[in-house]
Amino acid sequence: QTTKRLPEAEPLVRRALAIFEKHFGSNHPSVAVGLGSLAGLLEATRRRTEAEQLMRRALVITENSLGANHIDVSYCLNTLVRLLQKTHRLREAEPLSRRRLEIILQFTSTADHPRAHFDDALWSYINLLEKIGRTEKEICAKLDTLDRQYRPATGKLRPCARVRERSNDRS
Image (tube, rainbow, N blue to C red; front, top):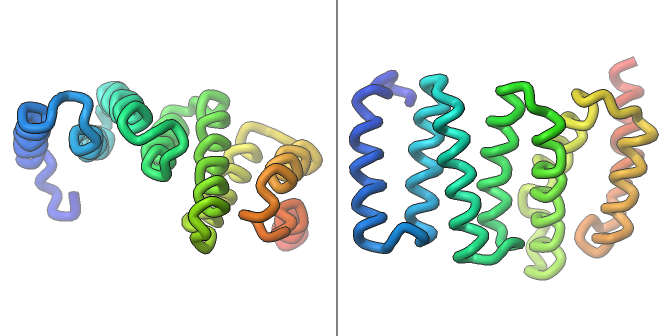
């Protein structure tokens, strides 16, 4: 993508994907990675409908092969959420964004991993809720629910306080 040679890259990515499917089978996590790569390439060339179909397939493969709450599912969700946002389908993106955040919170609490990607997932979710038109009070209610549910993972981050601080900074 940085070399601006996307038309040349597409057949190579498709060829790699075909090799993955032939070697591993069509439902292997490596195939999901290849689908994600191809989806990214197609999105970069504004072929978003095809990119979305590939990302949804990658998500299903990842969920089925690694489990619905595996951290790799959060990566698929993130890519799909960003694609839906680019196509102005914010309400469709919202539950996927929340699910991404929940997976990261679960991962953080069970793997004793220090908040892997938490801030990005949190702010992406908050920004999406704001774009949808949720009020600060509605956003805080959603975040408080998550905070109570995943308190060990959030470490009492008080996400609503962070939202209010940001609101004050904007004023």
